[in-house]
Image 1 (cartoon, rainbow over the protein chains, first blue to last red):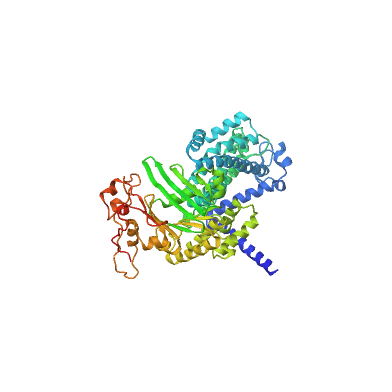
Image 2: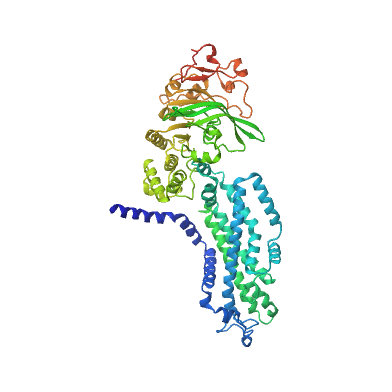
Length: 298
Length: 332
């Protein structure tokens, strides 16, 4: 019996020790005030996205037109005012957070999984395969990201799904390059050779030994890319190729309100601020992570 | 089953680069008996590590290539096996200990998981069982089992080398290749690690190829010694034969390069010159331009193999006509 409690005791000891590495990064991240500000803002946005139904009613406040209350300045009933159709801007921003963060995260996941896979095998195997993959991706990279996304949406048609695909695909070359560079820097380490010497196959080596050791630049790049994807989504929606009205989205809110900017600037100011805050906070976190993950700055 | 665990015959390994062909191993012959330890001695660049990697079939290709020869391990022809079969053998039948324990462990995986990984690759056991076995392996190499969940950076150099040994031995290999296992450690730890390896060798009843440039380490651990120079074995014999009846001028040079513990003020007598350029090995004996005994024939003809006993041979022209030729000495 006492043996068992001993085992549990060691198990607990283990848990605290296992977390040590991420705890180390967190400790260093906490030292950076800008990163913490960014983190606070993005947590706020995440809460807004998660609890949107509790904050504002989708159909009643964010979608339904209410001509009698149109173009009202910020007040206690509508803290960000109302737009040209009498919809509550605050409610629309809250619901827009869902779309922006969701599409941003999904498109980065698409880019990370496809680009990461291509970059990993290109970097690991090298030679002809590397050349073939990277030259194709170089061609993609030569086309400006937003132009590529516009082309894809134009070809597939405007919808949230196509938006994610468009932004995701246009980010693939960037991710492939970052992952490939990271893989190249660790694949000649001696512990990779040691892993091969215990009989590990290529799959085990890539998944368990190469990728975990090249995580730092990939995490930083992904964080920054979520920010630029949110920007891209808003841009596409602004020019009418992204989320279609009346679905609340920050970019399309900007587009809808720009005719009224002279007299009712709050219609574009608040969605614009939302975009700026989201992008800024992710960039601050990305920069903070870059410093926190860099072992040389310990 | 023959009593030969490892048999390498006429192995030739070259690195084919843009600058030319590096002749790393040139017709190497060694055998290791079951449960015995062979010391492979030579200076930097003699082809020791290339030999070790050939046995693992881990020569980086390109540029490295096994040109000809045969490697037989436990009755299997290693050069005929495909990659899948080799993966089953590596870590299971033959394991390798790398020179630098600081870089041979994955920094982001706990040491316990790294040992367990080797076990799970080769044995059909679950995670829990493998972790349990990993802890036992740590205990065997003298590290408390409850440290299995720590990361490599929490260990000292000597302990890391113990972990590396634990990984290598986790599947009970028949042959262990130790590539300068103590070079990166300081002397006090060296002695501990050697002692550990000696006891584990007996415990696991495995054959071992110990690669080193330290004759002291050889005297401590090995049964047989092979002296390697420029990709060839120039002298081989049992520990006693090589240490008491030095035959090859190069072996003599190695012994003269060891400080004398009785007379600390005595100057060392290093071997003059450098190892010959592996891009362009001389036609005759590779050692002739550094050899104090060199004769005209050494420059033009490859030296023959001359046997003094069943186990002891030397590749040198000096003994071709007079078997009882004596080196000048300087031996202590």
